[in-house]
Length: 292
Image (tube, rainbow, N blue to C red; front, side, top):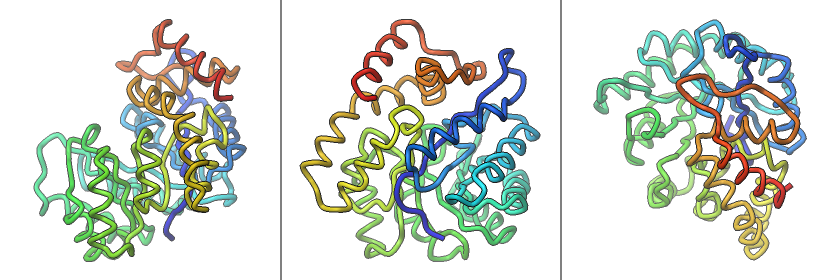
């Protein structure tokens, strides 16, 4: 399975004391994404605060998401563990509960070399038949993989089938497209360069934006794919300030604040992350008033 279109990222709602996951509210967030016409749902990425969840919480969110979506669209489960053993265990669990794709990040404390990264991905691939999305996001994972190296993994590792590129460097997407002759699907993980990425051949856009602005990202994707360049440009620049804001303010904090402003309270982010301050909330409120 290779993904295309808008891959929506739900936040993970917490209880009022932030000590547990609120699965009922997670269902409401998933409903918002489904209403926004996303083409797949990717739980437990950075927007879902996966790094701040215990193993039991991670499993609760993964299982609930798969069951709640119930085959309506594909479900991607993010795996970003420090050790290969942990990553393998999480990947096996994703397969057991019926996920469709694993989004695998080489999360690291020590700087990993390419041999170590390759071995990590290969071990996960050997543990489950699920397709693997190679996720390059050095700002959160501490590991930066070149287009050449990621394509080497796609070529040599059986289940590594697609790439999510989140560095914000459009040249990397051009390289992936050129070096693979357009045959390896890649997805954009950088919100504020969505238009450039889609025009560069990205098969999809991974974003939490539909949590707050409905199907506007989907409209942009469709306009690009239909060759409606002026419409696509208009749609993108309408969203641009908002897309940049939610990234620079922290995805979890921004999206959760936005949902609360829209009457969908899902709790705040988990410390050390902090909610948006009043100034940022007011700015977000103004942007949403213009967009929704």
